[in-house]
Image (cartoon, rainbow, N blue to C red; front, side, top):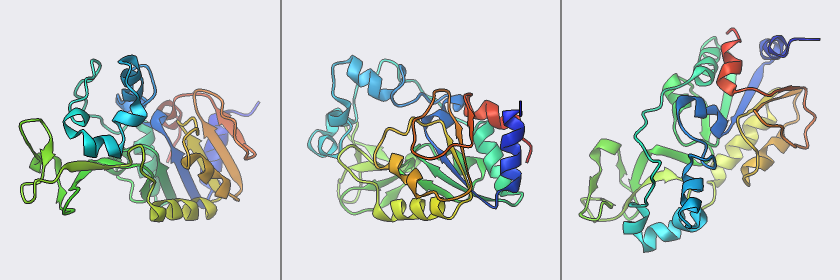
Length: 244
């Protein structure tokens, strides 16, 4: 029987244009819980009898900013995540150089921290911030908060928010278009660490018309594409076994 790691290595070596489509499972090995896992923010809000789709929405942010920025989370602890083996391998592969395109559903910017240059963030990121009134951009260390713990712009007192896609917001059309373009022009698609249940992200894989599809996920996926290789293992552990 062919070794799946050897097969994956062969696929990567032979590919000219690789798209890596990743979800929360790519970052869990960096200490970040899956949004919907037992330790995730979504599950914690449900545990407190709160509707995550309401309290993590743009409408809630605008109408109840004091509640939005002070949501109780008993499981919340400060984590400074670092890129894991998956992030580091992809960045090293691009530096080889190899045409590696990354489309991520995560907002942690760990791919960029690892050194990847072509990263499409479907849901934005929580490292860049802007004022909702004037649009001024802020770095985390520049943000000032009022007495209610609401981040405020010192120029116009507008609310400062992270550049993430909240419930009730759509992914930017230009971001979706770029993701479709990259997937459509790839000959190897690696789907990793995602359940592919969130719209419209789950539909993007259907733009792939290339040669091979690989799925790296702890649980099986049901997708409409022919799959050439399935590895049911943690993403980082899988990439640790590969060579650049």
